Image (cartoon, rainbow, N blue to C red; front, top):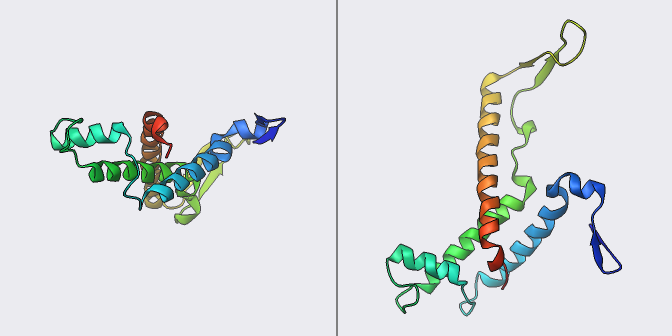
Amino acid sequence: MRKVKGQWVASNKDVMWTGNSLSPIILAHITKLYESIKDHDCVGVPMRYVEKQAWIQGVDAYGEEVDVDAAHKLRLADLEELMFVFNTDNEPDISDYDFHCEFVPNEEGGLVGKIEVSNLEESDRYTKDMREYEDRIEKGYALFGQVYRELDW
């Protein structure tokens, strides 16, 4: 991504995988927001989090009994989750698992045949970790859509 004459321009490479282009930008924004507000007592808390905390407490969202500090912590927890989601380094690295795959050629000599795995337990562990990671990412993207308007200081 780059700016040309004041307009953002994406290359073909940028649009092939948003993890390469948008994720670092979103991560930088969320990280800066988190660092800017985490230790400040006087930061305003978006109404979404006040309402969520009021629901947790079972009180009126517009009353004085809502624990605003707890609402602030809810916001910080969401930002922490988004920092995990947009940090592409969190994806399980297949090289950290003790197995390898080998493509066994089919009768015609192509590699579209069977895949043999050297250590099925490690392969299953990697598959499980990837599934959990993908589930967390999907939930995180949904969360991003829900809190997009609250990503301002």
